[in-house]
Image 1 (tube, rainbow, N blue to C red):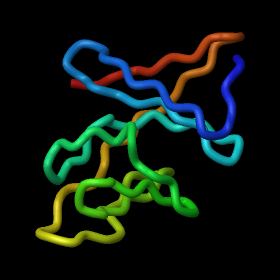
Image 2 (image 1 turned 180 degrees about the vertical axis):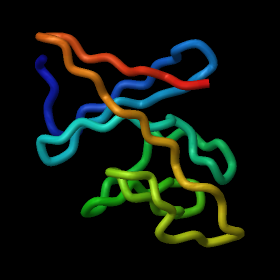
Image 3 (image 1 turned 90 degrees about the vertical axis):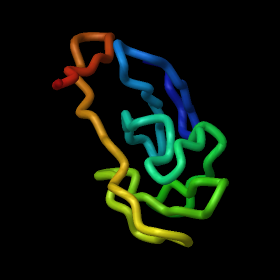
Image 4 (image 1 turned 45 degrees about the horizontal axis):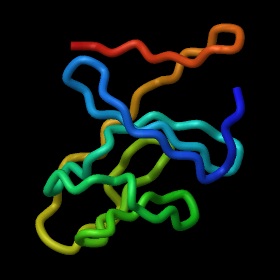
Length: 96
């Protein structure tokens, strides 16, 4: 697997819009749009261990999706999905 820090890839599986990213050697799979107003997070900045939505500055913990800062009304946490490793492949199990 040839991922690198700063790597981002947005894709769709069934009705899930997902973004795979790597930061500090760790890989994360999260929903690809901000839960506040559905702005695409592919253009977001990473500051420390947080993903910062460029539209309104909402901040989410990358590891667990917890909302840490909001500039308007609060929103739900960012959905995170566990990655499944099998040999040289990466996958995800999605629930309903």
